[in-house]
Length: 184
Image (cartoon, rainbow, N blue to C red; front, side, top):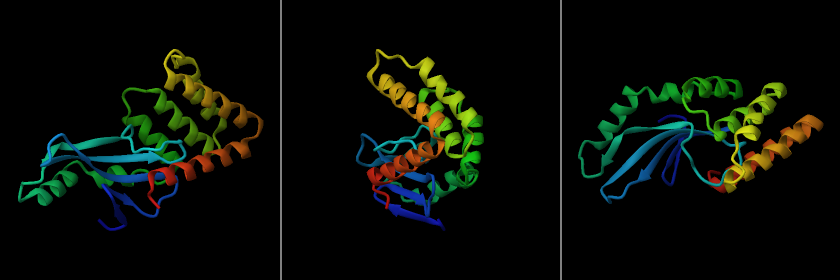
């Protein structure tokens, strides 16, 4: 695929800016099969692993013993119009618009990604509105939700008090995520 690089189990668009976009070949319980996922990961959300919150599985699973596997995968990629899915996001505003349209269940991670993208795009009021959803919906008796709420509260304070420093924080998180995913 032109404009893409391969590394480990990923095929991703290169170069990338705020997003990692591509395909991930995911192991299954069988040695002869795997899953294929298309994904878009906002790198400014601090993570140290690949996740598919903003992606989808292609097909139901693939068998490596199938002699026509490559042809079938490309057929499925074309059928599901995966390149359009990836090409539809080229900037922060595209990401917000696209994710708002395709996401049925608005999880805490949804609000985090949308809110941080809006902050990075200079849309502070909208950012704070989305990030506020985390603060009111998080269940503080659940450790990861409590941690996310605390991180969000700190970021919101920073965004209100010093928007330039908040954007710098997002770029630092982007660098952190890029390093942790080992994609450079």
